[in-house]
Image (cartoon, rainbow, N blue to C red; front, side, top):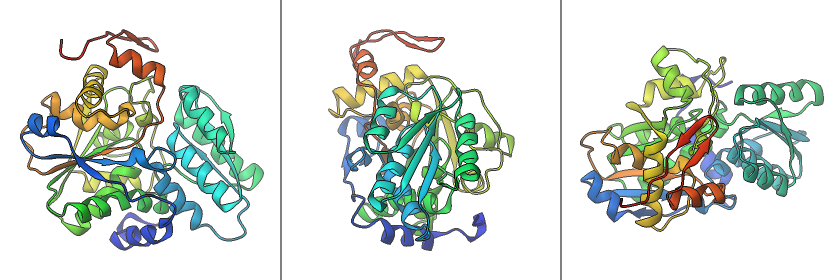
Length: 339
């Protein structure tokens, strides 16, 4: 695998060439409500407008299109959107795709991947168990694994979001990036800081099972317990043998912040009622951190990434209507917007 010191802005530009024509250049739109709340212009990169409804298409297409011509099949582990991206890219290339997922992944995301023609295998109750099955398939069936985050082509593909954001608004000063396995955060940080080293990059995750945040604090990759969350796309480990996304996030992120389920709920309601946007819980962790006062004064303009729209609509409607929501053993009490 490519070493962190060898990975840079040129890799992201190369990915931009690979994905052109398959991946959309998405708009960057203002949120008047969040601009008032943040005290600075607040802009949202609308990655939910990708063909699969999520930014993960970028990294998946970048990685699949970079494979040698004799590859006949790929596999991956996923909490949903990466698997959808790999399934889409594999179908476009005409090769087999097997996506390994834990039982915590919402059924809507499982169904979406199967609809794209990929085989889905449900394995265990954690991303680490799904990852182990994906790696086993490489040995047993000769498939090529596409990591959701620790792959240079995937990271470079996600980094094209940073290129677009800085091209759309060269004056951006702060980027709030949803943080999970680190592929998105690492790629965006490489791209944005490669263009403007003074851009501040903040990784934001939920406070239940935030593997990259815990790993950065520990100084090495660690395993964490996984829980059901409104931000389910941010679940999963980063792998104890992580060689790329962990060191890039450790070295390039200026700060990492955690938000609660209650804060994610509040931000989802804000985005729905104020911005009229239906999106996944993982999309709003940046807004949640701002609204909860966890970031202090931020230099603007501020940008964040609305990462996807492949959500459980029943759960979303319960959250928006102020109903109680059961997340495994955790009861998230309902709250009506504005009350």
